[in-house]
Image (cartoon, rainbow, N blue to C red; front, side, top):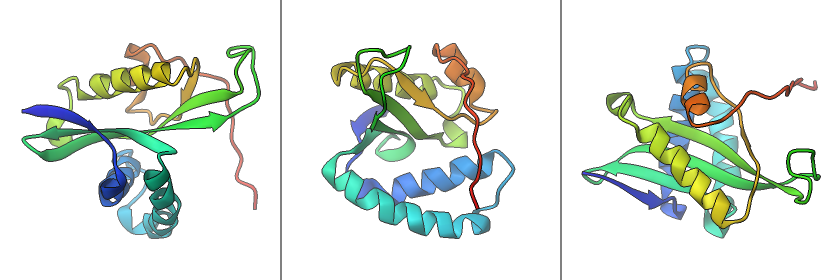
Length: 153
């Protein structure tokens, strides 16, 4: 039976496992290449799970976690798309186990994110997508933006 629940402070290992799997599933990285990121992310995530600044949902099938989505509220200057609010919602670490894909679970997670953002009165949200995830997000109403990135060395 599929059930959802809020992420809690006991989900540190689950979120980290999903994050590694998410980055590996795009085929560009191996888990062994992400050990430093995983250690740093764990240290970053732990206090945010405790204080609730990282929130989200876990989907379970017969009590076994099979998917999750992380959410945050970012401080951001007002923008033409959210002119009266200095905040944005942020979606990260969305992952569905391979065995449960193509069953509407990603859509369920995105609907829960929309509801949570709406409850928090966040009117605009962003995310970064893998190429595999893009069709899922577009089907849920997400649109590409003109964002660019650069690694500073």
